[in-house]
Image (cartoon, rainbow, N blue to C red; front, side):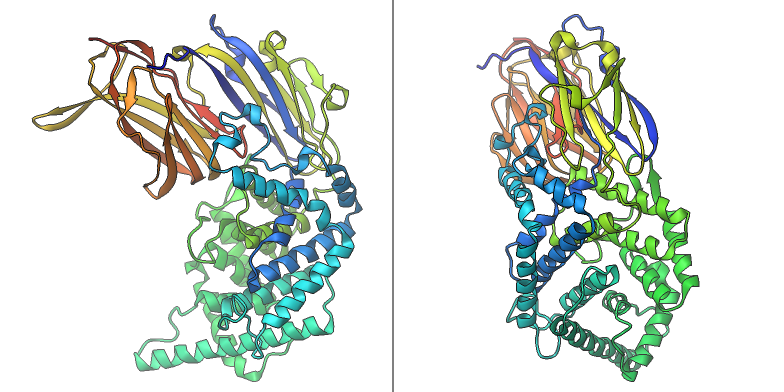
Length: 619
């Protein structure tokens, strides 16, 4: 039997965040009010990122290096290089920052940073490869801004796209595949974005490639309309009812970028029909489609309906000081129009084009806050999500990149100036730094941090307090993650299974079956989350096989170790989850059952733990 220490190192975290021209005070209540005689301070760490907008720039190399050679990814590489070239040329500070980032921790994956603050080092997780691949992407960021290489990449991507395009103007998904209308629309709309932003001048070959793609899409647009008419006639269906397909909405959005490419008269009937449908049925569409419809109508001289749509979007949105402006209904699913990052990016485009000042800048900056807060706890998973997010963050609303002012921080009664602290380096661009105090240097007044942000943009950081404490004296803690743990004694009776909650009065016997119930609540979606449930050394798990499990639509890997059960969530959606598993009593004595801890490996400031529990086991 393993004898385990009755003390453990606990990390309490306090996430902090601040907006343009604000002063805020944050207090880590547990440190301020600590009165435990058995608690021993280990370390207090303060970290701050003064300008998180630079994290979007660090995501750019991923687009360049996506390994698959399909038309969409080839276009994404072209799009990323065009954007990068435009951003680098329009903002010389970016190139300076990149030079300073070379050979520093700035280019480590967020999964690999802050190991000493994480409950599990990255080598022990199933995500080592994710961390390494993200670090490699970031380390090649300097290559991205090598302008000669960039021009070669642009030309190479364009050549590949031209070779993949059919004579009809269509693109396949993969070279040699069939014509794919969605991929062709996606590529054409992307070229439309670049043109609208003034990012690039298209040469004759590229302009021709775009023109024949748009003409192919005009034909497909007419074809779908003609098929709809035949269907309605054949089945006696009223054509004035709602027949607004997502493919046609996507087409109208793409087409709105290319007023210079003349439509044939054959498109006129379908065009009038679908614009009429757009005005009539926009309310019944998803968030993403409503955003596209607002832009379609605005660009087709129907400002009244476009304004109606954005007022409706505004009313349905939620705005919070921390998370910015977002929509509850913006959740992911398997359709291309159910993608949260792309939807949020589209909303930035919608409000920047249709909303009037002074409300416009405030709304766009609130929408950008949500995108950046999403980046704090998630990796943008697809090339499409990353391109759209970067496009929205860097090229709309207030320009946050040039901001160099550091956030002012007062901890307790001491002003924190990282330039005056030995061995503390401030990262270029993001303004990220980390500093810490050990054992006896930690005082209760250091639980309070007063933060001031001058100028535009957002900033975030965290306080981490690490201490040693007896297991049964640990009290629960919550951040945006919240945990509750209960133990139940399970008995099989004549009337079926009966469970009763275990308290310090419960007398357990050898051989008893205990059910562990963990309630986990998360107020936002997160990736790469690790939950660890400790158990008393007098208990043994019934299930010892580590395996991937599915429950309530949540997938996770469960791994049983000698003293704890680990749960790894690649993706944890917002919501409340209950986990249960069983233990067998196999040793008598008075035990501390330990606590359950949970932590985002991407943003360790988001962590939580349950309170400690004692159990008594008789003969």
